[in-house]
View 1: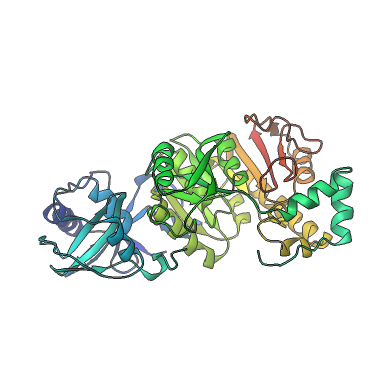
View 2: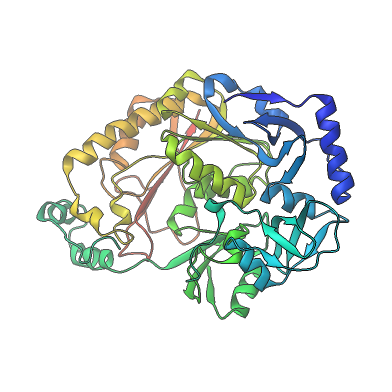
Length: 151
Length: 302
């Protein structure tokens, strides 16, 4: 596994994006690393007490977001953790709408929100982020996570 | 079920007839019955009570599992277990009751460094992570690279954040002596305890298979033992029922390792489900208790 710690400037940018987009203050304990191209993971310090190279590590910690110069998209788990304490850009959706999204469909809905990727909160919890098209929310759930059959 | 009718070879009947004389017919009959469906509630995301209420409101019928507060048996449902919003959200994991026992027996503490040697698809890893409240560190290893992505996907779905996923043969852990506080070795096995899930397993009964796998299991046990810290604890489990892969392996291991002690497993409801000649361990026969066949032993390093 190739990994590299984010530079301070990059970490500060992500902190800023989390705060500006969602009103979320990133915990100090979150150490940000690239694991794979543009994929930012939160890695516990304790992991580095282990011989990472010799163990043949594939992944560690949790996938927080995709981060490129013009893209900042939270993972499902990232959205769930951020969304618990987010103060803006959270869209309440119905169970029916949540079902549409987890099956891979976009939904028609006025958002009145300004972030490109908005956190989607269903009555039973946060299901991830959707791409905000003002009158439409585009599904961002990867194919391998979608629910295929209803029964 | 992958096979329309279960086929039990004479060699299968002879073998298990010797192990459980007088109960063979009951055992064979139990293998033909489907397993009760069960789920493990992910307390990192929701309480058992809340999930139970939510599912009941949707017309499901779920009942508690006596030995584990975070487990539910699903008696009636109106959707496939893997295709619900709650499953998508990681509020539960579809997991057989027996498979929940090894992590309970290992009982990790929040600061522990734990090795889950053969981790994929992650049912026990995510349970360990939940029990540790995402504290400490779990090294979740699997040999199959294809299985790593399934493991990673389940870790993300269940919100397990204290896990390092590694890929490689579990036998290499001897290269990391006295590293881990606790080790779960849920070893690759012939899977005869899982016949109720897949009848084709019965057709594949072959002494060569269990002898071959018993060798691998012994190597894995020895390797993991080296990686265990003094005073550390290791749980060895399989979802099979041959004596060679279970009690014989543990007995031989104890003979060869003077620093190993077999610890009595006390789990409410399993007092009478004991290993053959190893009363400290648990052996689950599906005709005696309505679960998948399993074997669990706990070893402590002096």
